[in-house]
Image (cartoon, rainbow, N blue to C red; front, top):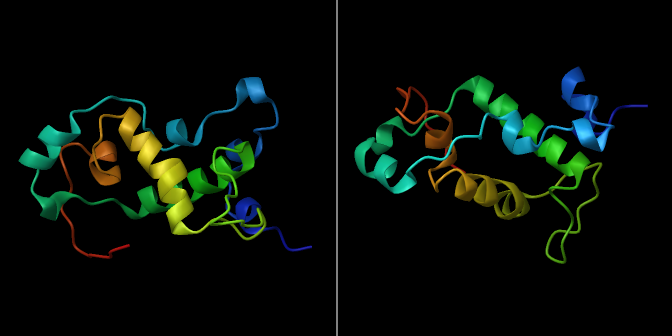
Length: 126
């Protein structure tokens, strides 16, 4: 059988989340553990430097899959997703991105990961 989307790209460390006492949250998985001053960062770091790396994108995908497995992202009336196919971006934003960035001081996801900003050589929007 082909693995479902949330099992396919999870590293072994993420798959080993069977014990609730030993599970790492999706937020911790992407390094979102510091509290920052999001307003100050957005005021001082130029928008052209609000960037993520290719590795950050891969980590984000793993964090979403992990959050689904842990029940941190759950189906709603607006997105009754099958865990085998995954949630839509609105659900991910409401249940993962906004809560995690709020706990970390309301910086954007990019500045939460890279408070000094990064040089950007490719722009993709969501």
